[in-house]
Length: 202
Image (tube, rainbow, N blue to C red; front, side):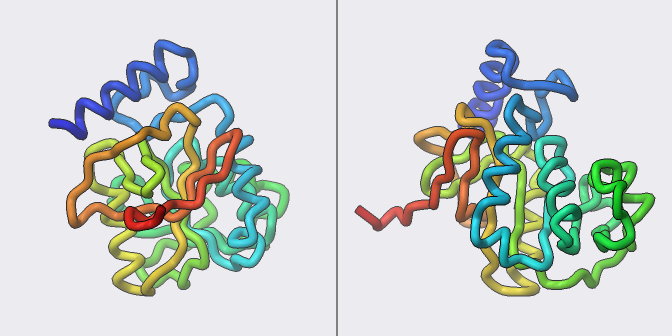
């Protein structure tokens, strides 16, 4: 209940302040937000991004520019299919030269990608969030798909840095968490980059 109350608070406030954008309403979604492209560009400046040869991204709307940038930067893009119904999609940048913007949409990804369960090891994972706190506790839309994606990747490949791109108002003081919830290492907003603190750090 506590998690759902926080989700609804974020969805309501993003709508009321005009921060949420298409697809609307943002209820029940990883909300797309004003400044998603700026957050994607901020992510692009990180060393973790520059070094990465393979980027894994959730299929959510606010991460579309992240996926486009990955392809434009010559990186292999691995994308989860919506609700993991059709496994994982692997897009090679050389196959979509000049069509990166379209290939980064769900429709375009299905057109250009190879569908597989055996995708290459990502160097960086980018996920969407409804809310996130400075300790890396993430709140998704409630279906559990983001946590499943992250736990599957970590079980298969071990520790890999995980980033989320969100609006500043999605960064909150506290997100309730349970043992199975997957944490995030780097929070990127249109205005700042937050390296997640350990709960034990001063």
